[in-house]
Length: 130
Image (cartoon, rainbow, N blue to C red; front, side, top):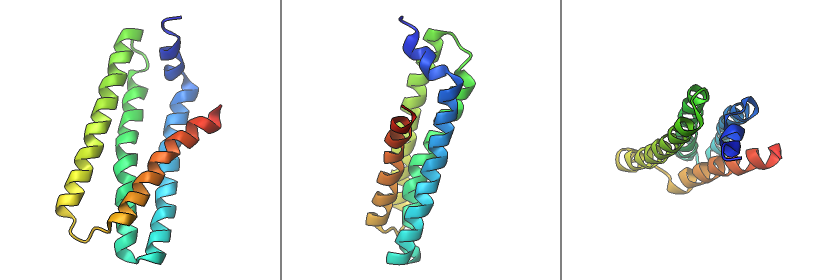
């Protein structure tokens, strides 16, 4: 019973779900980008795309990391999972800081909408699976 949660994360179906989630994040980001482009213009479209990609890129790297780690033992996989989650969070925050500092034409509402929508896909993907 101790290894049951780890076994569920490591299953092939869950790996597919993780990559499907990243695909859905990119799709939602494109939709947010189109709407922001219509409402705000190019500045809004680029900002919404950045917001969504700030979430999707670290999740893609995390899903790839877990896919490569799935053959490890239970304790080793748990450590890889925690390390991957930590790196994902640090990368997300770092990307937001870099964008805020260096992208001068940023439209904050569009960025935040793209970021929030891409983040909410995580809940939708796992809710839909069950």
